[in-house]
Length: 422
Image (cartoon, rainbow, N blue to C red):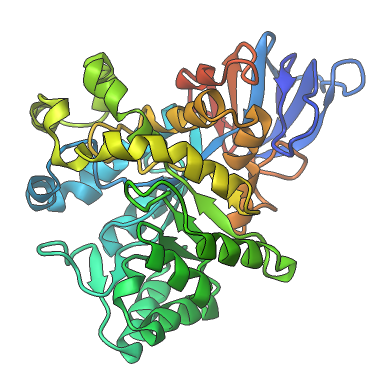
């Protein structure tokens, strides 16, 4: 048995933190939670002091891309490394996430076989990483050139159902839908209906207004990104649709993953690129790939990917606040792996922007990174909070994380499934 003793516990439910906390862990489960003086530590338990620390559930990142590692040229990356995604790149990404305090993550878009293999190898304890929930390939109207390995096109209702069934039969955890505004309404509806038939949530891109409108019509469970390019805000009709869906309690929460930090922090990274030199993202990657990524990031200000970002950045807070006031439940997710965004650094940056730039309540932000993701993925009976019977996925940082959310950039202790991994 392990006993974490002395720290301030933020359990994930959002209530008042527990001072001088005691958490008892047997094998991979939490068996008791209490305070020094009232919860006794059994003789023979391994006592781990958390004095001076904030103790909280392991973080979730609800939007990662294990198959990419911050390289600025997707076309080159996809063609060069497609054969090493499964043995090298995706495992490296997963390991980096875990050491950053991420004990659960949703991987949204990668080749099917590699996605399932990496997830299952982590679950069997063969390689280190968070518990991964995979979508496998994106479902869209037509794959972009040379992306057929991880983007599946849909041609007609029967094909839409068949593609989703193929993913469900392979064992994915979630369906990722994109460009639903380019499908017929019947095709898009078939994707959602078939996914729901197999008990799989549907994650929908929300880059364009019509993607959101159609997503709401067909019953998408969770939207990704703030979208709408440089337009200043969501149109009124979309806000009304979101509010109406949020009002339907019988359907459960409508989830939204805004993924703002990659855009919000671009200019600061461009102007202060020192963080790109942080060796934390080299972990488990061969020197040749590290050199390739570095070379692609030589001129941070020149990347086509980010040229519109300075025009988009001022719109992010407005859209974020519209979502916050609309009744959706927002989730922490980052798009980790996009150019200049490394799995070892992304997740804490999202929390930092929410709290320190947008004024979001730190306790609610932590809940959006712990409790709510577990609800969205249907596993809140197993993880997401520090409470009796849950898996012991626990992190700790030295200091008061509610006062200084950026302490999460250097997590001191990571426990996953009851085992100390950092």
